Image (cartoon, rainbow, N blue to C red):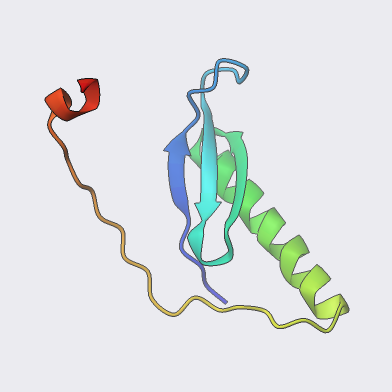
Length: 81
């Protein structure tokens, strides 16, 4: 099974610098880890536990069909209004 993971720097001041969030959009799961590789490892661990729990309960395990990531930009003036 493969799932897309979006990696994003953590900006929460309660975290030490260098932590990243790992989002698995298809399953609406989020975790975090130190560094990009740490975040990816945490996502892999979370995904394994999530799938195991779903199967243990006899529930359907959703699979990702397609994923598209895009970046959009808005004018700074709109943010200050």
